[in-house]
Length: 274
Image 1 (cartoon, rainbow, N blue to C red):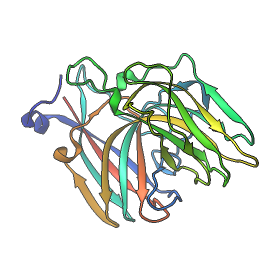
Image 2 (cartoon, rainbow, N blue to C red; image 1 turned 90 degrees about the horizontal axis):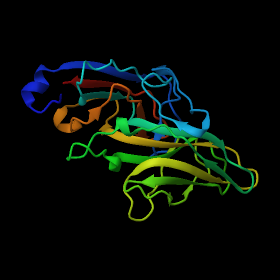
Image 3 (cartoon, one colour; image 1 turned 135 degrees about the vertical axis):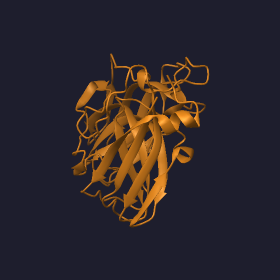
Image 4 (cartoon, helix red, strand yellow; image 1 turned 60 degrees about the vertical axis):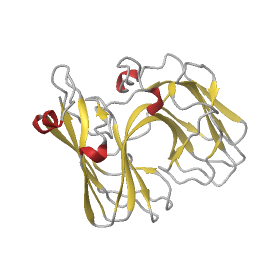
């Protein structure tokens, strides 16, 4: 089934999922940070502790809010978001599709992580307009500094299979130098790419006296919105775009503060089912 009319949306069963953080993340203004490791509801999560196959996290994974299973063949849609923040910042909701790590930044040379027998995240992607092809273009590549990166010249690079099934694509190199813990860095595609089917692995290039650890992440963006300090703001279905959500989605809240702290954001997520 699917919600295809406004009347169906009005009459649809709706559940509400909350992300309410009581702990803040110290970061730098204008840079994305994840709130997954902060205290609150749901409780703090951590990197997957897997660098052999990688992991497809779900709503049952520690750090992600629980989503009630949908009835029968129903689909879920992001129909409303209500957000409050004590500080000015942009918030974003992602479905974490796949991750691997953490990997310690080496003090010399390059640590190469090669993944094998990776679990598939394809079931957490909506279809393109043809109704059969997964929308691989909705996948975004990120690196999470699960331990702060020291002020040395170390870098990160992703290896992946692109949207067209080319098997050995390499991303641009991303500097992880002097990056605070829980910062998230977008990893650029190789020229001509715009999506990914599989994470082959990644390279972590070190430098003398380097410290820190990185986790490689594939995510799907569901919603982004700016919240003014101490103001409750609502985005209805015309603003959320009714992005498809799955009852196994691993929903992670990210923050782009305009100061040096994410403070304690509170987001209520409405999922319409039909």
